[in-house]
Length: 250
Image (cartoon, rainbow, N blue to C red; front, side, top):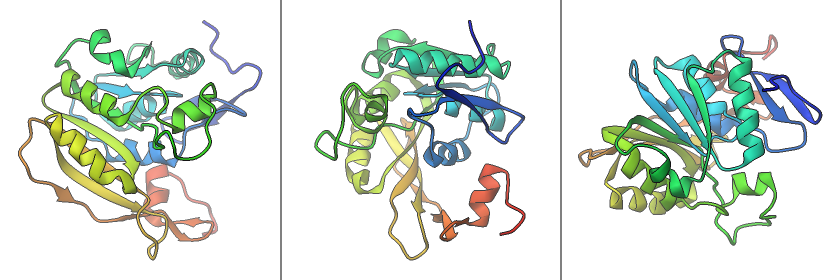
């Protein structure tokens, strides 16, 4: 398998453990949402983790760096993205700990053994079909719009694939919170921990980070807000800490 970036690809430094990731120069690239989710996720020692819709493979790589999990699997429907994610894992010498599987989230329950994962993560498409322009054949559109899967597919897969008391961690748009909570509860995934993310202190929340537990009891902890920007062009101290770097002049 060719590992190094090819034409139209670039190599980005992840700023942790010397890890790098291969991405398309003009295609879909991971964003801050994935980085925030990777710092919100809790994985116990020797945990078995599945990332639904892994894209570039960013979440399995970051979680391998940040958690004591034993094995990380990324499921991705787009062949080119899956191949690129597998090369990124190999580039970092993580072939034994990270496996990229090409497959459809809607068929995840037939791909993997039931009740087999301690943790499932997902940074799913946010946009519903009628929200904004989309090209159904475009990788960016597939990553951003519910074209190939809806949230209920992710919730349903987690219901089947998680062990009892296993956790689903996700990031999603705040305006869809009510829908997301209803879907999770209907699938027996009890929302247990939520953190709202705000671009600025005076602005409303645009995304949230959520943990739901399979078979959990009804009680949810609302964590302190996460603010992205101190002012235009300057992140807050917590965001710099999450990324693991800070400019000299801030």
